[in-house]
Length: 344
Image (cartoon, rainbow, N blue to C red; front, side):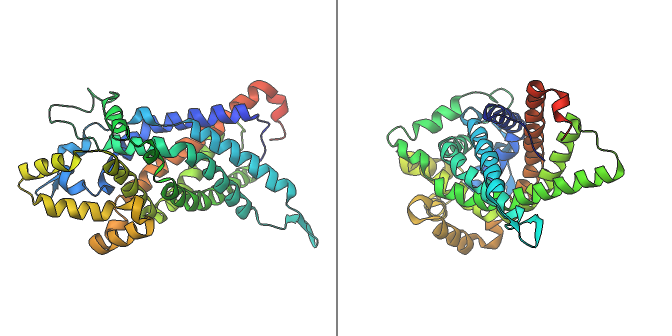
């Protein structure tokens, strides 16, 4: 399956797809971040039950989302995939069979794209997740403050004295995204080919933008769900590390937290020490954070938010890649014309 796209087409389609999906599924991502936070029980539960704070300000931090990283990912992915296909020789005994299996090429191409994308994405991701954790008063509503930049500014101020902390979590983000994309994209490419073969066999293939979007969305959603659930423990560790970055940058946060917990009748010192042990990611490393979560919260702690992450990824990946593929096909059509797409 080939496209006659320029790098500009890919950048535009990727950025538009990322912005569209971020806008639609951002509330689910905010809830997931809060559930995975070491402060979840302290901030979002009362007497063991979820309180309304979990659902306030669900669009907090959306201003920090870096859609350009998606364009960088797809440009790198498509270029690397094309290059690897070009240099991949065929088996001497079977000229139609490539020497290196296609799933391995797709995994390598997606991993290369992630390395580039994550470098751009990490500061935005750190700001986003810290903004998602800003607690609003009970008088604030998610509808009134949905797109208010206050939470993002408040999160950014925590890093004013140490901007390098914005890149803390790059290793954790790469460690999560590389296995995820290495699992998702080969399975996505395989499922998409199989669906098109099935439709070709039935004579029902239409080559329309709608078909491209639906087939891509089904393939990406299915592949993304499996990859998301499998990599949830890495996502939990990544979340803890990025939330810990702000804690090491700001001053006066400990006293504020103590006052909040004492007002709720909780043992402030014990709760803070537990949260700090679980969130001590930047200095101790991802493996140490994972071990601490496993020790204090068990296997359940490592898979906290897994179901929501799976559902969010099924919706997000389906929309993301569906919009991206439809977008680049639309841009190709505008340049080449329908006649030039006949081979597709």
